Image (cartoon, rainbow, N blue to C red):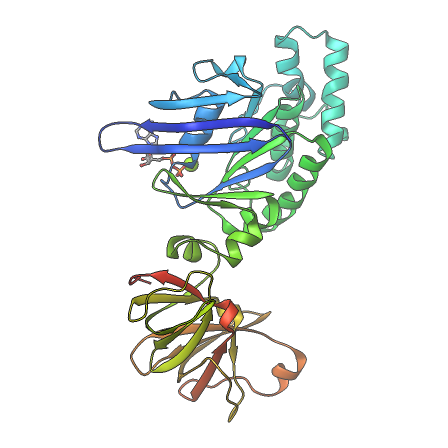
Amino acid sequence: MAAIIELRGLSKHYSKTIIGVDDVSLSVEDGEFVTLLGPSGCGKSTLLRMIGGFEEPTQGTIHLAGRDVTWEPPYRREVNMVFQDYALFPHMTVGQNIAYGLKMAGADRKSARAKALEALELVGLPDKVDQRPDQLSGGQRQRIALARAIVRRPKVLLLDEPLSALDARMRDQMRIELKHLHEKVGITFIMVTHDQEEALTMSDRIVVMENGRVAQDGQPQDIYDRPISPYVANFIGTTNFLPATVTDVQADRATFNCAGARLEVLTDTPPQSGARVTLGFRPEKTRLLAEGETAPNMLEGKISEVIYYGLGLRTAITLPDGGSLFIDTLLTDTLRRSAIPKTGAPARAAVEPCNIFVFAGEVQA
Ligand code: ADP
Ligand code: MG
């Protein structure tokens, strides 16, 4: 597939000290759903605004469908942007809001209304065409904004935190609808969010950003299962971090001393013997052992807290060296009836060698 967007060495330095985006190179394929993910202030909106033409880069180039658009104004790019607050005209009907851009571009009234209706159809609201925005719910307004953004079939749709103004339930529903809309229209979507769950559920590809740069770029599952750094491991999902020392190295694995235990880890790039590293592993890939049970790759400690969250339990364990870790256990019917862990009790946890990440150096968890 051809790249629809090609960013090369793109930077936006607002001043010597304020760096919005720093040397980002990124290629997006036609029809992809790519999410820019990261905490507030990491440069997501700046990057999106540069693609849209609302912000000028201080360095680098932007190609759209093979054409250099770096210095083109927004209306000369086949890109449209959906803003967080929807920015609908309050005095116009839904149909007029959607048809507005078409009319500005010279479409006649009849064909503009037909296209507006078609776009409304795509977002599931054809019966709202003659209502005003203030007669609609937040979720409906959001869908109108989407219909307006796609009505002229841009090559790329840019979405900056499109779901952040919605309440939790509506947000969950809109996630799915936005994904379906993407599948139906086949336009390339680039979405900005700080919500990892949103990124994981909706995207073909996630670009994790850190201080204006790309920290990791990959498919959701890749990033989740193979985070490249503690930053990524901690931003997407939860990760237990424990300091460890390498005691033995083989071709595809290494052994570590960690909190008084011996842990084996499968890794393609084993560190040097004697090195001090940080091991990371997911709470849901950690198993709480039954009383008296032992297993390879086992850590021993004491239960410091048990948190119930409906689907399951999060158990916190304090290790003899003062470190701590979380274990997530799904509540099956068996577990509901029997062994709910008790605070203060001794506990053992086990992690498979393939489920442990090795990061160089020491990490502040
Ligand atoms: P995000 O969308 O990830 O929260 P932004 O792209 O909005 O991040 O901001 C990245 C950095 O650039 C932040 O440090 C922010 O304060 C700064 N920044 C954003 N817009 C401007 C601006 N117009 N002028 C100066 N600094 C800005
Ligand atoms: Mg932002």
